[in-house]
Length: 279
Image 1 (cartoon, helix red, strand yellow):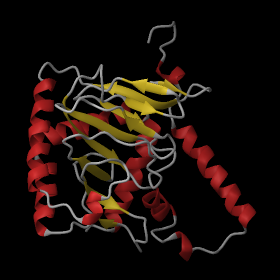
Image 2 (image 1 turned 45 degrees about the vertical axis):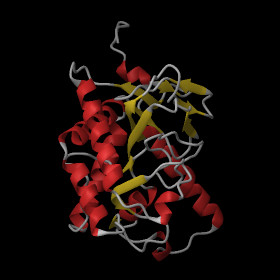
Image 3 (image 1 turned 90 degrees about the vertical axis):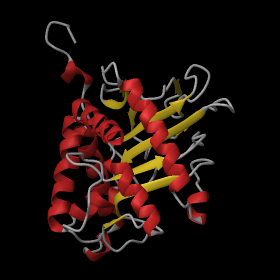
């Protein structure tokens, strides 16, 4: 884990599960994403990706960017809708998705529970909203279809500010020479092998990847939740603009309190330490 000055777990280099066959899962994921890249029909918007020179195909539940209420991510064609539905139904994708969800629950149980109760309330209120994966708290997923998924420095500003985003690297590349994850404000460059997962606060930490060799392939699979979904539920399933307008100083006070409560949902590393010094 990566800790803040006060000992809170703000990011986790999760790695891979202790599974002798996990390399096969990575190989299967690579083949799946290569096939998806061939089948997916990108729009002009898909091709203008501020995160890098690759196609990012998203699915799940979103709210923001002018939407009047939470909706399932709209696909540009029935073909693309079929591709996304098929991706989420495949066992290797589900294994990677749920490994990330389990790691989130392990390292940030209070924050994970906040996600779970929020999404459960949202799905009860609107049964037309469809989660990507069963028993998984992330609202949205993006499949970055490569074949050279190397992200430019960016932040995902629509995600929950104190939340965590799961990123899983996929492909065939040398993790010593390329494909590292760069966490700019933390001044960290970390090896990020294929089949591995990290949890990072993607809304507030600028992140990117180092280049890979021209003959190598790299894909990625990300899971995250928009901040707007949490506001919608906490507002009683209403947009913020439907609530009484607050004075600027009152709005700032609410913002500070929201941030304080959010940070307290992050785990303290001391909570993982067994009395007596063993971890």
